[in-house]
Length: 256
Length: 314
Image (tube, helix red, strand yellow):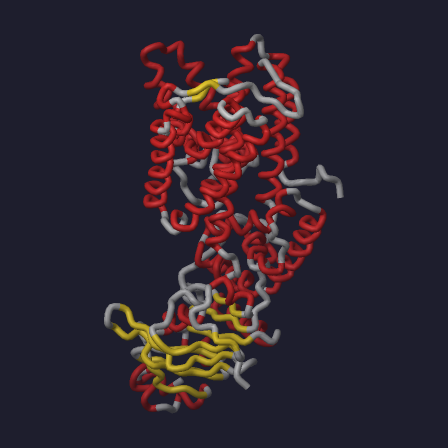
């Protein structure tokens, strides 16, 4: 069973191969992690899969549909959602409105009905609001429903991005360093949240530098180096892979 | 569900109350004239605020669309004898098409480049209106016949007052509705983060085009009404200075606030009249008021005052 397949993907920036003939397969269900040293191409890979960068070569296939070069906004329709390493919150909107934007594709976005605020629009917004409240409570932001996003703490904004991505009802959610900048307690909470998302049947792809988090939640790990696949496998496989230990985890990785 | 159960209802009711009471306090036609101009400027600014304040895209050329609307009404009614309403609709359709064609390439620009692009557009429109003197009367302008709708020909400041008031209330109502809808949230998301909006399924280009065309059509309709009301137009109506005035009204009143657009239009229309007491120093004081407002109320009048009223500190 394959949910997402990346085939011979390449992308270079000014002669530097950020992603170099990379292939990988994501199965539906398990939490997958992508790790690697800085500059290994993790975020580039995310940007390629989510359509923000166009690949120089290769294909990206979601179930049976070739999504290479698709417009970014069409990918949400196909069930692909993501968060960002550096926050991309709509700071001009409240927390709940941020999440409601995530329901855009399921909303009545016709111009005329919106202009005249038809009963359908009012009803739709009420439903969306309730759904958004559920999602905010799911990520433990029940206290921030109508909060101004520019006065929310960093950790809360990270979870708001996750709630917003979940609002698109994705099959795959790509989390780009969800624990970056968080304190240990917040990181534990994110750990729990990732598992909760996975239990809801959403396939998680995680890019993360926090090894404790990665080793704790991942069922399958890809290790990138220089835009190529260095190794892949279960946590145990990766821990015991001498290439990985040498290239990335260093000596202390052996003790974990 | 009551139709009055809508976002911004209190503000809308306050606006309607003000409009009802105002004629009792206006001593003569001169004051009515100023209030009518405030109304027309407000209508344009509400549209422009959807573009600038909510969707976060600048335009320094919107007077151009106002001018096209005004000249289509003028030329089609006076030279070709069209009914005023038909001329107004045709002007709006032409502006709609023009802005739609231009929107795709121009909305790819960002920040300063978008400002330059829209500025250039406005300048081109002014040049065309000035040069095509056989049709437009050139830099001297042209007279415009009175408005007429279903055989009724409104005449005089008080009648125009109620016409513009009705259009203004309708514009405010539609704008408030739009902003609170999924379309409005998509527009605001484009402002907040284009890339995030896009990954959530918002077709960013489509919404930028939509709001640009919408604001241009509103400007065109207001231009048509202005032409019939004043009875005489010059290419200055489409000019750069007018575009800047419109943007200043939006920014001063408060971006991303429908009532801010109305407040900004009101203040910047009244202020030059009030400041005539300063004679030669009029423009100096005018500039000082603008600078002072933007230093002490950076987010514009209405949002800053609303925050103060709600006890929130920014």
